[in-house]
Image (cartoon, rainbow, N blue to C red; front, top):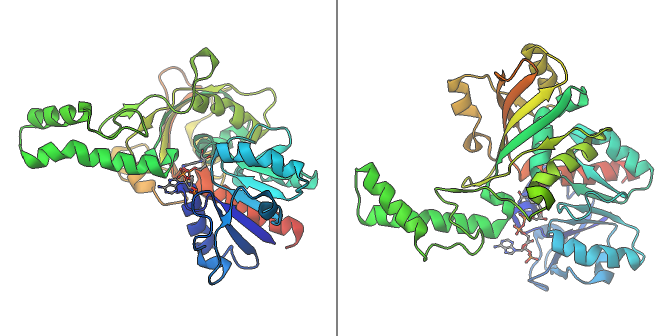
Amino acid sequence: MRVGLIGWRGMVGSVLMQRMREENDFLGIEPIFFSTSNIGGPAPKESGDGSKLKDAKDLKMLAACDTLISCQGGDYTTEIYSPLRKSGWKGYWIDAASTLRMADDAVIILDPVNADVIRDGLTKGVQAFAGGNCTVSLMLMGVGGLFKSRLVEWMTTMTYQAASGAGAAKVLELVKQMEYITVPTRATPSENALEVDRMVTHAQRDSGIPTKEFGAPLAGSLIPWVDRPMPDGQTREEWKGMAETNKIMGLHPPVPVDGICVRVGTMRCHSQALCIKLNKNVPQQDIEQILANSNPWVRIIPNNQESTVRCLTPTAVSGSLNVAVGRLHKLKLGPEFLGAFTVGDQLLWGAAEPLRRMLGILREHLGN
Ligand code: NAP
């Protein structure tokens, strides 16, 4: 199988490369690497000694691949996908971007949760497979068992999303901001917390702080807005919560899911505070069992301070395929209201992992 990789040096693409190398996914395929910014530059070693990066906008070159995996972003998919199909290309397109997710002829891929939908799609001739929104995928990896058991009446999700969820350039800006706001505290060291706070706040509000990417200081702060506006006051990130959850799980009628999505100054990992309205009073022990049995990567974190502080943070979870679910308890709102907090690495289960696993499922399907 000739597999074209586009966007392999970005945030998602780099993690995809790392995972594919770790899992020996390059064995038995012929990888071709594309670029939008460095055509003719050296390609990764997997494509053979001396091979060069191909032009990611060259439809003929793309069409020479049996499968294309794009981590390049939505604008690229919007520009290339339709013309490529119109040119007669019949290959498989696997994408990290949101562009194709809601299309009728595309399947959202998260195989630990919806392998049946993916295999059914392949059998029916579906050729477009899109990774889900990172926050939605991580939420379903954590509490999808409750949806599968048809126990959820509705859910709110309040998110704490990492800078790396918005791409490589944003991560670099966050770190530059961190550096910028601590310069005064190093120039004039003080043990007076109020004085340190004043210096940091002053630096955050200083016009010199780099904000080209985020539009505001994120270091030492947060931004309660992710993605573009939608009607009725939602952002598109918030809209995806309900739309994608129901499509991935194949829920009819749809289960309402909504909340507020917030960008925070963490490097990696999206966290979410969930309020789940169950359709009956299920004992907490049973809930924990359903969650723990739903897939091999769920980690139930006991609802106590020591375990929470040690295991339920972006720092603890970053770089791991495990999705931590903790703070599980019935809320004072009533016995059918479950509180939960989840943390997962959005570059792994939220992005790269479903893509590389989809390639594996495809190869198995094609006997390749
Ligand atoms: P990204 O880091 O911005 O990378 C996308 C492309 O930007 C790269 O392939 C590269 O293209 C170019 N680029 C520009 N400056 C770069 C730099 N300093 N370092 C590396 N690459 C740079 O975007 P991403 O976060 O990987 O996201 C890709 C797609 O996945 C998007 O559609 C996004 O919505 C989706 N997604 C992202 C996440 C996440 O956690 N980040 C999660 C789920 C889905 P060239 O090599 O061609 O120049």
